[in-house]
Image (tube, rainbow, N blue to C red; front, side, top):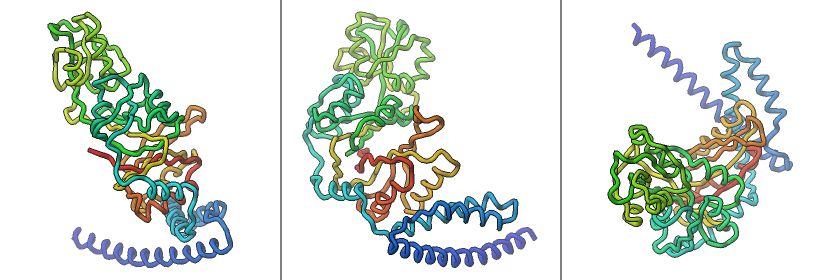
Length: 382
């Protein structure tokens, strides 16, 4: 009896869905007509007052227990209608022209040899990232992440490498704080396998270690080992710097969390291999440039934007990506210090720069949010 009842309900749903799809297609065709009229008359696609009035009207039509659901449904319908209308406008903005020009003028092959700014010293994971991206990188080591950004902005070097995310520890906070105040473009990304090792001077014993030094991210990634050791934790700017400090310290009770290559470079003993909590540990680096370069095969785009501080603002933006069939691979939110309870978002989109969806999105993004910045389209090496 229960099965029979369920099948009856499903038949009813199927009939309703058939009618809904017909009416949806009819509504979108009418929206298309409105879009063509607006284009001919030079009117903007968005009529905020009309949408607010319409939303209140349809909510009043619905049963009381369905009003909130109705608002959500029609908010999405409005987004889809506007997206459909904006596609008819066929307007190219400055960003679209810049992207198009970069695609046409960027060389077909990514450079094999370049001056690359990296934070840290010889043996840092950024060195591995540079060697993975370039056949013969000429590495310029900088003391801080901001120095890397300044070197790129001033033209001191063509490229810079910055770690932005770790698969177990999350985003690199210090880097994201800097991204907002520097102008650059991402031209490549690369993932580097991270294996931390507990390194100490020759002859040192694990049981005698009283203090461990490393970068904050490495410390977090090896928290289980450090807790079991009960040692003092000291942060420094880079894992390779940590290894160098230990080598020069003259202490047998000090150890560094760093790479095996740093151990060999600075003549240290490896007291504990694979010290990280999770074996499958990767750090993602972005390669940045002062000029917009878009190389063939670019299928990822990064955007930075701000939405209005009101319910549904982010949802409507995500709905637009969904309507375009664009996959969102990463979403990072950062508070804006000068604006209370307002957030800045970083999106990584999985979409080819050659697709119509990408072109349409670039032409309409500045109408979808309060502030918007295109940070580049690129390929990510794994």
